[in-house]
Image 1: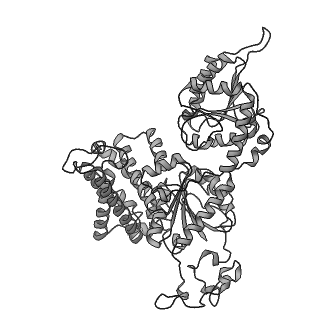
Image 2 (image 1 turned 135 degrees about the horizontal axis):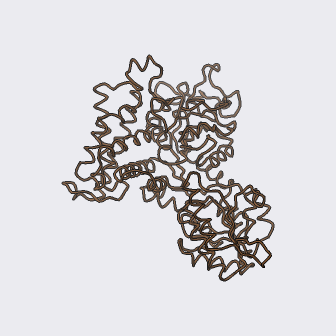
Image 3 (image 1 turned 120 degrees about the vertical axis):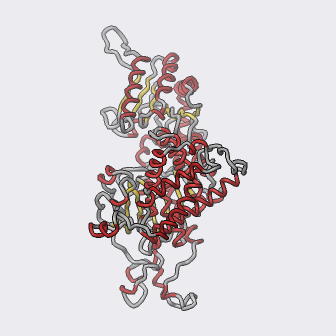
Length: 605
């Protein structure tokens, strides 16, 4: 079958989220054909190019979310100097009827986003609608959001995009009227004109997929199944493919997209009304994505709870854990070595969410009980100034808590806490990092799916972790779990394992067995192989025009049996020119594979 893989800031680009997972999925399901529809996040991401694509990738269509709409290849905006002179700008101006349609649909969208309780949990303001039940308001606002979103999508499809309209004065006035209407949240009611302009810019970026030219018989209309690798903007093309062509939608979220937006919004330099409006919009969008998806596959129970909170039906949810390569850890995991008896090791990216401050204070308690204990912190700081600042703060705290010590008057002092990076003389590779300690520690206060914890389990290491995210689900009963932000509890758990080598060995062996059962690439591919077949078996059959009669009924023997066998002879009709693109993808011959990436701005390849 032909799969339309929808990504946002990831595959096929060389950097980004879910890149490795998507590449393993495409390569592992070689019996299917994949068309990639990718949204890019930045010019730097596009400049780094694509990963090498396997043969089963048929077409790649890209579009950036980071440029002005008139610079985007693949939108319906006219190109060239003459076209801009005729239309007066990057997009064709709407006539009176189109402007009326836009105002109607955008007003419905804005009213749903401004309604209290859309996603931020705000209380309703005073007004004649304030006495209406919360459930009734939510249901009505969801219907408004649906009408407005699909109305704008149809307008963009018929009349050349939305960019000029979304940045127009009309859009800002409609937003202002929606914010001042009775029944809106108190925070939203305080939005000033600069807040409305900022929200309109963000809305233009998030709704960019509505203006793309992907929605035709040569694009998303030609696929058998849309697989969105995340919610949010990546799932928007899947929503429109289902509406315009009836293509079933599968949504995979290793971490809840709405939760990620909330976490990112807390550190963004935006005013409270803008944050509230964006939270409301993403909440409504998540609800619609989960409602339209045939199946939603969360990566863990933590993400599943978020999806249920956003309205996903339990019957649609199938937990599929991310698949990870275990081969590189086999030698260490099968060695039977439980590691040094006096060393704790932490492996990961150094950033505030990992709470290394609490780990250092916990290690101070460990040193009081075990003076020979050591702590090795292995990892690089997160990109940007925040990561470097946090690393410097941790190093300063370690120097204050643990002054350099020497065994005698003639020895050089040594600090029991070391900060190292993978690739150095002592830690050449990732397995060497986990082999450096007898106990692997995870001290995070915020965590989604703990990849580092699974790697430690593959290595057969005993672990001490904080109870955040999907940690308990991943570790099961094969490690110790303590509350976050509790250095005393963390220290007690580390001491218990350091003093008991036999227990460490038992827990490490059980952890490796659990990881090999649940978190390998093979189990992930088997799960999606079954889901693909299940979804396509319930999808209505698409019949070629030559295979049906005037009444739409199938013509006997119109499709030869050879059409269901892979090979170059499967083209139906009198010759290659008569081959229909609407035939099932498994009846198609080999297709050309794109050879490289376009420049900034995206487009077809």
